[in-house]
Image (cartoon, rainbow, N blue to C red; front, side, top):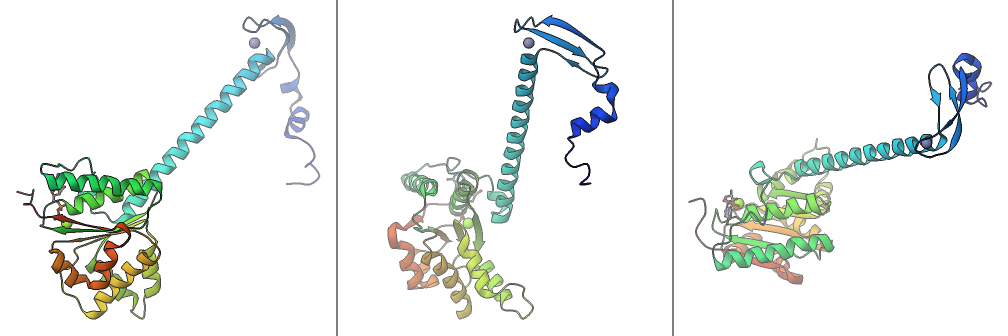
Length: 271
Ligand SMILES: Nc1ncnc2c1ncn2[C@@H]1O[C@H](COP(=O)(O)OP(=O)(O)O)[C@@H](O)[C@H]1O
Ligand SMILES: [Mg+2]
Ligand SMILES: [Zn+2]
C-alpha cells in the first residue's frame, strides 16, 4: 500500500473521490413505525439512511447469516475430513458401511459377541485402554464386518484414525521400505502403523511366512502394544492355530490388560 495514502480511510477517500454519492439528495424527519423513534432520513443517489435501530437490526441479521454460513462451511470441511479418513483407512469398500447394529445376532454366541463389541467401541469415546481383540473362527461369520464397524465408529464418531490391513500387506510394505530406493524407512513404516487409534490386522495365519515376515508383524504389533494402542487381529484359525501362527509373544500380549479372544465357530452366513 502507498504509505502517503495509508492513514486515509476508504470512507474518506470515497467521499473525496465521489462527493455526489455521499451528499444527501434530500433529508426529512420521520418516525419509524417499528421502533417508534424519530430520525432524520437521508436520501442519497445510491442508498437511503433510515432508522438507526432498523440499521442495527439489519446488521445483526447480516452477521448472524455470515456466522451460519461459516458454521456450514466448517461442517462441510469436517465431513470432508471424515470421508478422507475413511478413504485412508483402507477399509474395503464392501465393509465401509457395516455397523455393529447391522450385525444379526441369532444365537447366544453372536449376542455375546455383539455385546462385547459394543463395549469395545464405546471405549474409544472415553479414551481407550489399548486392550486388543483377537477374532478367531470360521470364514463368513462376520469377523471382518464387526472389526470394520468399530473402525467406522472410531473415524465417524470419535474423530479418530483407523487403518485396516492384512499380514500380507504389512509384510509387503515393510519389505518395500527395505529397498534401496524406498522413500520411507522401515522404522517410519512401523511408526506409521503404530500411530492409528485402531489397527485391524486381517488374514492372520493365511500364509506361513518367513522369519522376516513374522518379525514385521511382531514389530508393528509391539509398537502399538508399547504405546497402549489397540489392535484387532483376525484369523480363521483355531486358538491353537492362531497361537502357532503369531507366536507366544503376540498371543500372550493380545490377552493382557483386558484383551479378549472372541470365537466365531458357528456356520457361515454366506450360505
Ligand atoms: N451375523 C451377521 N449379520 C449380518 N451380516 C453378516 C453376519 N455374519 C456375516 N455377515 C455378512 O457376511 C459377509 C461375510 O462376513 P465377513 O465379515 O467377511 O466374515 P469373516 O470375516 O468372518 O470371514 C459380510 O458381508 C458380512 O457383512
Ligand atoms: Mg474376513
Ligand atoms: Zn426502526
